[in-house]
Amino acid sequence: MIHLNMQLTKEKRYTLLGLDLNTLTLYTIYLFAFLIPLVVGHPQLLVGSAINFLIIFSTLRYGFKRSLPVLITPSLVATGTGLLFGSATLFLVYLMPFIMVSNIILSYTISKQNNVLGIALGIFFKVAFLYTFTSILVQNIGLPSIFLNSMGLIQIYTALIGGSIAFVLNIFTHKIK
Image 1 (cartoon, rainbow, N blue to C red):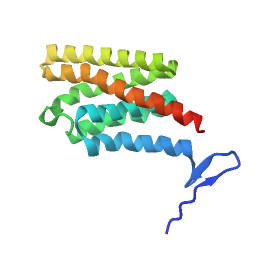
Image 2 (cartoon, one colour):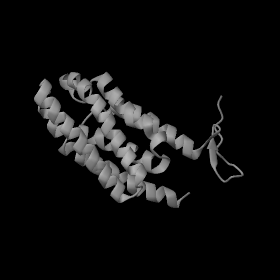
Image 3 (cartoon, rainbow, N blue to C red):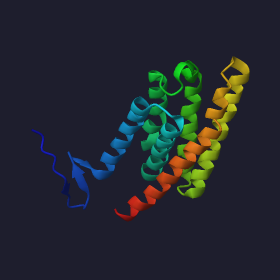
């Protein structure tokens, strides 16, 4: 039988299975980045808000480099499972690299200016990049135009929802450290 013992170390950090609480939280974020698109799948507003929350919270809390798995994993899982856009998921293969890059843009921008302005700029740059390249794909390879809404206005909503929750939670969790 496994005995889980949470203890306070001499550095005043909690550990569980030999992992400090910050590392355990980061690994939990990685796990959720994999599970949310796999288990929840849709609607996009819910999944996108949750993933944007994970991206923004992990960037605020752990920085850009440690957030990289969160920036890439959800797109791979959503495309691999075919849940998010149903029969149009095949087209997501074309968008997946742009979605990943837009997440990288969001996270990198926030990492450079770790505040509300950084989040707002990150959201703007992410959506502008994603919408621009989706428009190009719609015009040049016949990507269904339905993706313009999904990669435009809905991205703004999901990023604002996820970003707002991440910002507030980050403030709250820093106060209880």
